[in-house]
Image 1 (cartoon, rainbow, N blue to C red):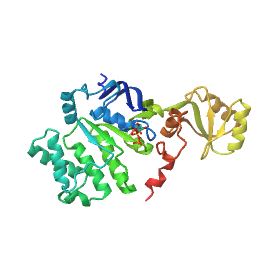
Image 2: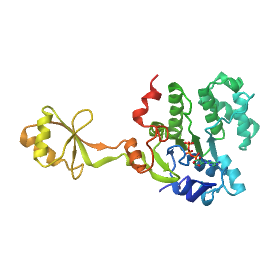
Image 3: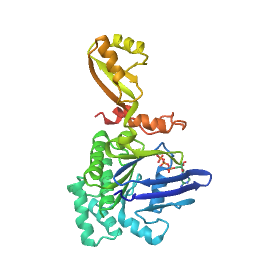
Image 4: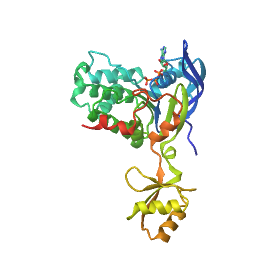
Length: 330
Ligand SMILES: Nc1ncnc2c1ncn2[C@@H]1O[C@H](COP(=O)(O)OP(=O)(O)OP(=O)(O)O)[C@@H](O)[C@H]1O
């Protein structure tokens, strides 16, 4: 049986004066960890604001687990069922970590005792051990980000909205944050909407992706399906004499190209039907080392989706895997 989508959006439009932040979003968000990707200004934060009832739509409607943010009663119910980790600093100066998390837990409707018990549990989870008793003003950026995640988790919500959780983190802090998000989605079965402009973050933690460009959904689907084997292309390697094999393939009417590292990429009518390549190899005495369907990377899928949109300026589009080295190298 297919599960109900956790979030539904129908005809969502949002204008800020002349700015058309969202231009008609229709989307059913599946359960599990979902990445919300898009260039700066695409409308991601506006979408999250609409889901939380912090922003009113100009047109259309959104719902979370059947609850509608524009209804006041539903907004209160949504607060109990949704955990929100904002991109901006939301921490109250002067408080200790445990005071902040338990206070925000009470605001979601937990009793004093439950809020305190849960605060300790989630602070353990994000590894803020003894730091929990220190004023949060002295926390490092990484500790503050983990504290923000802890407050989003305190009431064990059904849906987590995480807005740029790795923002400002050094490589070690980023790895730690991603391992927590991955654990929440993959091992603890949390529904997550991870809003990010970092493509590798989404690739590591999410099963499903939604790409928003200029206020519209440019692409959505399961990452496995979107990057599934390209039906028409296979990667071929021979034991030796690759150049001669390439010539033999051309003579047989195919158009092989050199693969970026080694081997050849050959376009065939169907990736499962590589018989023609095997026949060329057998008839000319080449020993095949392997024939594998070519998979797309999320990076290629993303670039295809935003084709036509202006993604050329550095910093105005999600970071690609090839650029990840800069943020992952120690
Ligand atoms: N309160 C507001 N008043 C006016 N314009 C706004 C407001 N909030 C957002 N916008 C505009 O709406 C558009 C979408 O903004 P939004 O913050 O939702 O994008 P985003 O995808 O989250 O971008 P970023 O990754 O930079 O945070 C932008 O052009 C932005 O300038």
